[in-house]
Length: 200
Image (cartoon, rainbow, N blue to C red; front, side, top):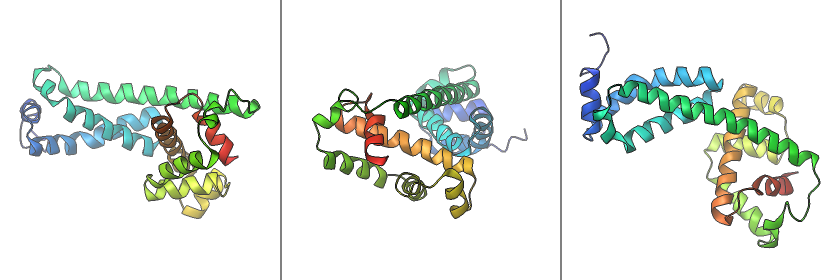
């Protein structure tokens, strides 16, 4: 039918639901570019779109049994992509507001109560542990921004990439570091304050 698929789409979803890795791989190759284009239009960021699309397929695989029961499994993939994209936009907005709020407020005992439980070196060690788990390019960009204090434009010029790509990597890196600290310390609300404490 001109789709480039070895099966009709319904059959492809059915086989994927049964755990057929080859069918799922075909589904991935067929929908990957379509989902990426859709997500990028919403988020305006390529790096973010790539991660969201990967998350879509991860969720599709984990919930593959449901694919055979759906009337429109293709629509379900795009619904997941849409929800994840909107969540990213909301989180990005909220994170920007939190960063601005912290930058305007003074560091207080309440804002840094996690430091009462952990020595400064221990927290710095956790941050470094998280940074070392980032992909190489993202790690370099993070260090150039946080350690060398280079601007988006300076980093982009040195690495021959766009400023939007730099921003994408930093947003994702900061989110990963925050989540890592949350997992290790059990605190989430004060993570940005801790990062500010060590990198400003």
